[in-house]
Image (cartoon, rainbow, N blue to C red):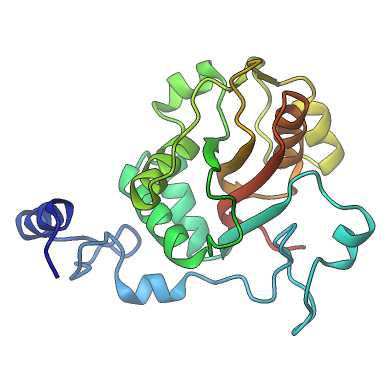
Length: 238
């Protein structure tokens, strides 16, 4: 089998700067900045509902009872890990410490753990946008960073400019589901004619699903035919 240029460059980069685990700080001994031990500690989602990614009874197939009674507007939600230690530390390293290598690691884990067979072949990645002021203060959009790495891994196209966050909102952490929805009311706007038919929303964490629902509703109203979602982590039920 012939060796591709990207793989050669990856090996050369690893030889010049060996991988170092973004969680424990030790050498990873591979091209990923995450050691085998820390990656094995990332808690996977087991028996998760395909629509909301929350746990179901072992062996249960299909959507959970809540999604059957009230189907969400998005068609599927997949997450690579449960938002628990150490997955939460990986998210916080990217979002609050600006450790961009964590975003690349999160995308690599997502690409390996999340099945792609059920997704439309023509789907485009759409990262959840930040308000321009917040993105300027942070220096980057963590969802965009993850989406860029996913696009390189899987060959997807990223949609830019189709959705924007035109109103700055309070941080969602600590708010109830109802307060989150009030906080996000009218926060997103889609650009007419720029929304593709099939979309995969990319985000770092899904907590209550409020942001995902508001974004999905905005995209469907702008002409999207089907909306799926990928996240690195899903917050478990309390």
